[in-house]
Image (tube, rainbow, N blue to C red):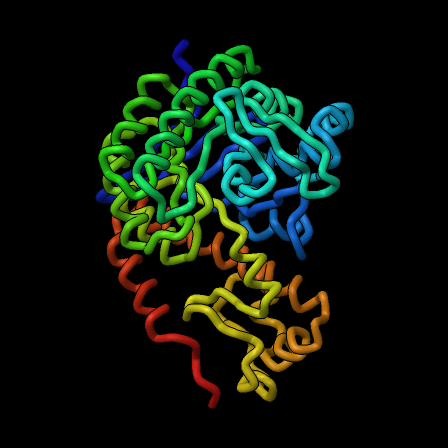
Length: 377
């Protein structure tokens, strides 16, 4: 079965691309950053603010929602978009990352993965078919195949074993998805660790199976940035031009900028909210650590040129006070500031690609980061 295409490429500048992905719950402009709401909620930020930052799509997680509150319960309550109040496009990760991150609580077989719940120890089996069923119940616009992700560095034999298993699971995932409603999508996930020939083999196998879109998985899991970028360079030229490309779990603004330059369209990462909870703000001048004592008496805003009101309207001194006092508001403000910065970066990239000025935008953005935060007067 050949899956229809819901992605339209609008412009390309070098390898950088911009386009639109049409889902049942709305259009996603690419390149796109997906804020992560693992269990159906963003940590420290309301769905309203997520919309106002300019995010078109968010991410939920099959494993965590399977445990609590349960896929069948969410389906009975109208699906994940209705249940959360988000209402817009949503992608759900299949649980493959938890195969790696919860290694002590799971067992992998040809059939699938058996997890011991990190909540209460209850046993759950997640097969490729069950992962698709859960994502259908959740009502996600974009489902992901179940895969096995290996933390790097790892032995070649282990990377090869997991990659071959993920290909077999990809075939089963597609068969389980074939009766999904029109407009819903399934992405295949390439594996292969940091070994170029395995990456190429995985990519070719997924293309032969055929998906709505293609994800590059198993990166940003312990390898240096240059290795991650080298693996993207191996697989991106092989991927169909008319299908979206998703780099999973990435990353920093620099990671995303460089991945776009190599042909990637979609990203997700917990970093904006996680760093916000630890007092770190992403800005056009790089990362600002609001825990630093130098901000204690600084009346200036975090960034007077930001498009986001909280970055312009609150003083560094106040943000420093909130962070040092461990007030929840500090984490909330920095989380929204960070997600807004990520969306501002994506918007700037889209505009630059459309106007054929991506190289200049990339150079200026990197120069601003290199210059660092504005020193106190």
